[in-house]
Length: 480
Ligand code: BG6
Image (cartoon, rainbow, N blue to C red; front, side):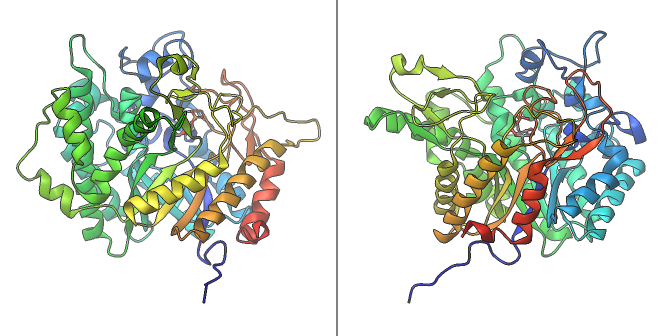
């Protein structure tokens, strides 16, 4: 007899996802050191720095750094968590700022004030029955590791990261059961400074540098998986992919191949983290462009033995490519990933393609490829919201976006995909990682703050706040 599956499993983890550098602020409080993101301003210099083409080791006069105050979660976390609890969150994804724990990255002892801050945050979450889901590194490397060691170019980063991860596991072993190593690990190839604290030097072979750094992160990730399993029995630790399939622009085999090849640029990371070895297509790529990865004798074993428990991923959009240079001319750079415009799909105000069906496709693709539980740890619509006089935000466009994605998630579950949970990006408005703007809002909760740092930081419930509360209360049932 055919089994009729319920849409969302009983213990499905509904919630939201955040990152320390995009919401905490208090960038030098409690003994915190400077991180890479603290030195990425909004404005003209943002992309050259994020891409690793321009260094930025000290704050500069005349620049505005959005992470310094962000939305001040550091001082307002109780109020914010109470709002998440009011929506019925089962979990909150958040990251630890590495430089709160090790201000310089290579300190002999961790910073107690930083450790205590996250103890307080986790306690507050648990008080409200909200499960913390912790990303160990979400884009912010202590900047002195970049200055003194060259960031992830350097193998020494592996042991700094391992020490940092072990410190977190030992300290929070009774409070945190869900972990993730690196946020969007494949972003290292696209935004090297944000992804891996890499500043490219004149004359360096970019691919060689990036893939060597990737190797270091992959080893560090596997060692964190090992430590997590040893220190916290029963914990789950995952990887995190910036996902979203690359479609072929046409059915021409050259287009299909190009799309597959593009997808593999990202899958490479997860293939290693989940299957425990370098895939043949990457080895061929290295041979063809003459990349030689510096490997230690123990590396193959480390990768093989310590693979992730689940596949975490962000999904905002699908992309599209072609082997035809003429078609490629019609590309957008709406996201850091370029894409040929897909004639069948609309895009957001920021040029990100809106493709709910792509979420079902991605879920199925990752399920077929890895056969492990999946966790959608980012998804959402960045949009300009208007705060009305009666203190409401009528964000029906956000509700429509999320609704259509939830329907496809439910389909994916019916397809047999094992989905642990869903955390929408930025449940409270926070700083955009890409542009540094506040104007690009994702939240259910509006924050009165503008791109230039003005505003009262007041929190206001949007229409989507009440809607998401109902979604969670019904465990997504209204979608069936
Ligand atoms: C992901 C990141 O790339 O997308 C988040 O993990 C980021 O940090 C999110 O904020 C949305 O991107 P953006 O540029 O709109 O903030």
